[in-house]
Length: 351
Length: 116
Image 1 (cartoon, rainbow over the protein chains, first blue to last red):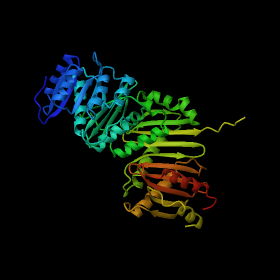
Image 2 (cartoon, helix red, strand yellow):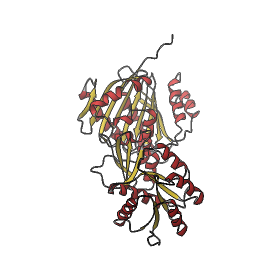
Image 3 (cartoon, rainbow over the protein chains, first blue to last red):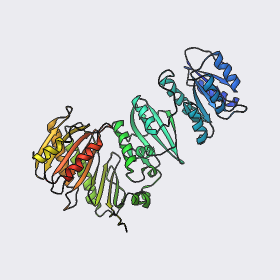
Image 4 (cartoon, each protein chain N blue to C red):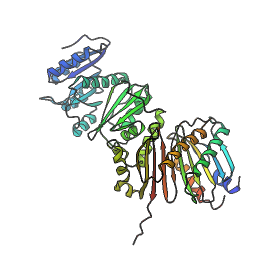
């Protein structure tokens, strides 16, 4: 089952399902002329293929009879140390299998594709692996955060879509030539969606081939965006960011005022106002004078544009003001404006 | 600059990532220093003055003591405003190498200073 061997990228697909192997070969033919695929239906055949000629990457199904993917990966680790292996599983949420695979040196643990879009995702991941090169860098076990993946994509000036899923919710981050240009997460778009996604504590991600988003909602340096995300995650503000993606504007206040996070920090939300960039009120709570607050947004935006004129400080993003009694947070973003005023609770007296 | 402020600030400097600072009285600039060669001192000083003044308008009447963090794409400006209305503004770079603990120490120390 060997195709011609030459200077093309060499892959070996190992799967007991001949239909899947046929689908792989068929899917590849339409787009990847610079790739050579070989296939094997069991571990013995795979070892024979490797003996005949090494490959760049082995794509290994985790569920196989006689010797399953993990056992074969263990064997490969001893027989072919340094061999890069991508594991495919129909149950990508199986954390135990993922953990074991990564500990055994698999470079990726991906969902087994069943659709043309799925194959496109797999090929995008393989493409990314071929560009990183097998000879450079270290091999090891690490837990990768979205932040790290995003940073690598940006540093490499790549164009891709980072698809994220966690707890039944999905989001996407669009990267164009190393710049983060758009993000979607639930009903959110733009920076708030990006921060929400980067605030997730865990989940699955896929690197997809880049396509232009319907519109661009994010601008600015990726370093700043990632730092902001890290800071928001550390501070936990605005409240419950990771959960906001699933909320509508009606629910935002409930999220902001939810008792556990606010009481835990000794903070009581007194006022919230969320507006679109055009000044349309998307949500407000206990806002005494909408007109005054909208004026404040506008005034602050103008003042900060004036203040930073002639400096390399760039666009104004936010200000937080802490006094002994209150905390005021104002964010001015391209797609929204947010004001949250909180009162600090008096410390509880110990008996 | 008053002796106490001079002594106070010099005990903390240099701070990694600190690009400029200013100390402002309610109606005058006491001192303004640009530490980064990549910034224009005049426009930097003007920026900090603007920010200190604009920040005062965000406080409720009667409030003086506050701490601000103004975030821009490339910089952050931390402002400590004392009960006597004197403010210290620190312009720091937006990167992970900034010595944030030192920045916080200066801000808190400035607020705790008995007299400026």
